[in-house]
Length: 473
Image (cartoon, one colour):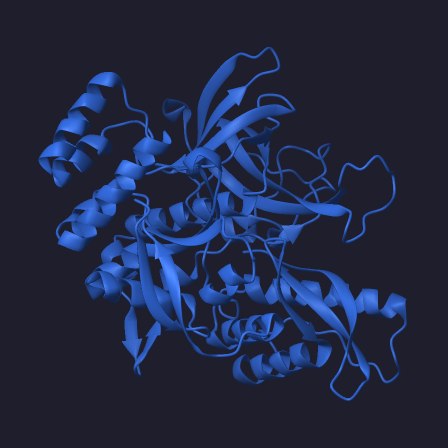
């Protein structure tokens, strides 16, 4: 998730006075409006709980009314503060930080706490209506859906809630996985668009874990519905003979056999993204990106209209980042950006080990860049659990402490890199390793010492990155 404060606005207080509100955006969409005093209060709470050594620097108080230039300076400082807190593995997943954001979201949208009915869609289009509070967080809603479906508690962690946008002809765009700092009811209703809704899908990548889920009747039905849906959307490639076999199994009600056959098909378990733009193998190429099987798969249309397919393995991505920039909406003017004339341009850039001694940056320009980044991070987390000899089943099971639900460390770690300025296309292709990667073997890779080296804070280091030899290429 990516936090920014791209704008401020002057608002009226209860006593008729005015104050500056700082608009916190998540993934380029307004999440909440807060005052400086509210963020200061959060900072003091965090400092009291975790100590001065952990907490990032907070912009100081001012005695006199701020000038426009000072407001802009404070906006930039608060944005960096929020990003730093969110990126911190301790602070960014703390209940203190998340509850602050949930409360601020509810206050901003002016939605009172009350009982409501929320529709959550399954992959086959079926709607599950659950009775919740408007103030219920994502985990609460997931639990309510699982209870309504009679999904066992030990399988709940295998699924997540996603915000999607329905498109034409049954297509859908994955906007994001709902996070612990938001209220699903508020998130979906505040969009005021019936095309957006919440969907329940499996949240893991390795199809070996399907066996755990299929042991249960409800889990089997959910996986079956998702598999059928992905085939109908064209996300999973099926030839005529395979289609005939699948149809026969479906008619017989042989759901396990149906899923087992589907697991052998190309792109089973992948998420397919909307068409976008890449600079690989050359700038301006149209591409369809899919995420799955520990890779990003590219279907690229070259300038000569030739189609090429290739995959980028997550274990060969040394690091990646998401960048954001404001670009003018095409209206025939050259005026600078304003809130009404600009749109957010998102890019995912990753540094890839093309050969033993050659690292190259690959960039994808897409509104779904953050969702792609989250997919990469969750793949890495899953790989690291397996590499350490841990059990993803144990990692997914929630721990109940003092009657409340606490996410496991591995689930809390699933977050993506910070928003940065757009990368310089002219900088050297090989950059200094993040300090995060000091324990990873990198045979045959030389580090740059140029002035353009970027610190570890600017990049999302990949713990699953593997140094590889010629035999692996």
